[in-house]
Image 1: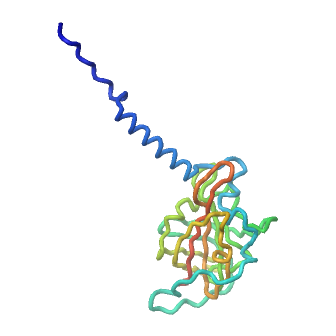
Image 2: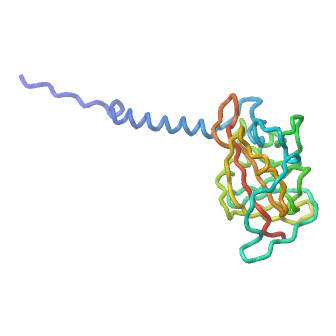
Image 3: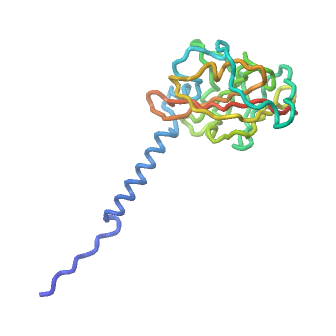
Amino acid sequence: MAPRRRRRRPWHRTRAYRLVRTAVLTAVLVTAVRCGGHHEHGAPARAAGPHARSSASPADADGGAPGGESGSRGAPPPAPLPRSPAASLRIPSLGVDAPVIPVGLDAGRQLETPPVDKPKLVGWYKDGPTPGESGTAVAVGHRDTKTGAAVFAALGQVTPGHRIEVRRADGRTAVYTVDKVRVFDKDRFPDKEVYGSSRRPELHVITCGGLYTRRAGYSSNVVVFAHLTATK
């Protein structure tokens, strides 16, 4: 009697297929945890807050802000501009062109953020320098909300040398060049480095970053440090 031939297993029941499927599912889950496609109701207000536990604010912090070259290489820095509110903010490398609204401090002296139902807005700290003025100006925006990606979803992809252009209410534009991008844990947020005063015109742009959980929101903040290099 001839031996029975073993039937080949269907491809979707092979060990190789199971291993590949497990690897793909793991990658998807890790991405979901890191990116956090949306927030639970009530959580988005934390998404772009400057930090979680520090009580300092832009008005409270002092000390020097991070340095960098003034103006373009080999060219003198531009003269600071007089006061005029921000109207819109552009980051050409990211395709961002967003309206700007003024924001202040909440009851806990934390920097406010734009309304979560208007995720494409950028907030500008109204009690700090306006675009092109001497000192440290601060802009803030959401990374995402429960409805999807927000204005600064890709802010962490900015690199040194990229431009940030801020149009003012008087029609002039302050052009900043990025010096560096940093990610800070919210429970160790460096108030003086981010909010500290500066003799030259600087802009620090803040959004959320790091890991996301439904209970605590994002664990970190992404901060872009830039300085004024041109006006037009």
